[in-house]
Image 1 (cartoon, rainbow, N blue to C red):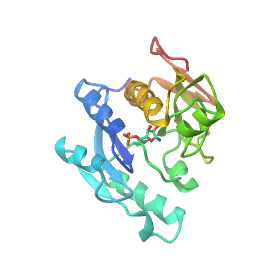
Image 2: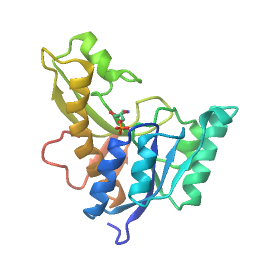
Image 3: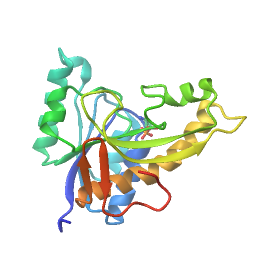
Length: 211
Ligand code: GRF
């Protein structure tokens, strides 16, 4: 347990509703402070949310780099420049290179709109509907070298209704994301998470969730 809030960088690519949840929870005293928001593209709603909250915002444009490695290194340099001790991928649609995982070991957190290891990748909600599952959900996990694969911090189930389309299901999934992600980031920031291999131990687990 640390006394001063842990500075984190939040990485986004789009609307930033999870960023907003992190901003709102930060005001509730969750043990972290958003030192910088970094987008891989300009003009997205998430950057406006950062500006509205008075949080420094930066754009590291993916297409300006020759490789995933140099892009990832630039992102980490930017996060370092703002003093970030952890990265939160909140709807960030790029895959980080191993150099980022080496620089932030067990300190990069991702939110994924399915119950991993089911439906990894960029179309998890659509894939769950197409497959016909009755239950899907949310996974918050540490990031490792493989896509949507690292140790699971917390998961929660969302039921798929017969008349769901991707929009309606994603909307209910996001309600859960907006609660689980700040809780997980808060636990990380307070030093309440211990990683042992693929397992993440919580000092205290939120009531609704299964970790
Ligand atoms: C979230 O559903 C997240 O799980 C997925 O992308 C979406 C981002 O939404 N990776 P937002 O930008 O936080 O609104």
